[in-house]
Image (cartoon, rainbow, N blue to C red; front, side, top):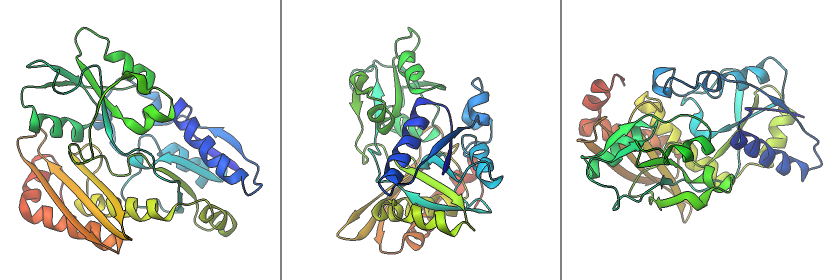
Length: 298
């Protein structure tokens, strides 16, 4: 079985995690390394390209064209709508969904401190509680991002805690935000596996490694994002977890400058219906105006 993946250390870690699960079923694997648009263009911010999808499209194409059997992704990088010809067949058990500060913690940051982040979601939520903060873009692999915190013109950077844990880089963490303090990106911390939708054998094999609680939670988050019609370039976040089998979904939608921040929390059994219900409530509560301001529509 051939697994398509990007070449970054984090992407390789994720592909190895999938391979290790498959090995438990005596399935041999090899890797196909794919370079994506997001890998090739290290100068522009993600929002200046195509937003969501710039780290997955070429990996998906390798599977669609038969060069590989599986595509492994960070779930947060996926488009909110399905890719024709592919099935999102498995999610590994979710890692830490939280965000972390490198450099200084929020209380230590001086007035007017400069924060490096490539995420509109992180920027909006930080600006909401600290309007004095200034922001600059952030690209590169995790080691590069951590190094940015050492620059004289940057006071701290914000990154995903799961990536730091997987690469054993947590020594640099100054603060970890709870999911209540900063609602994560849709799919954050989860590893997603796609295969061709007509490959019944591989679909069945992937079902055996998929974590159902993670699937239900990520599907609720993705349904919320899909209903908004947005991608990762918008200040949008969602985090779902299970409580006695019931999905609890927290979501946020904000203006880019963080002056307006809408939140909604609901619970339910059906992931798709729950995600849509949360989105509809936020849209009715002023979200449509925010999406219009941010250049999206629903």
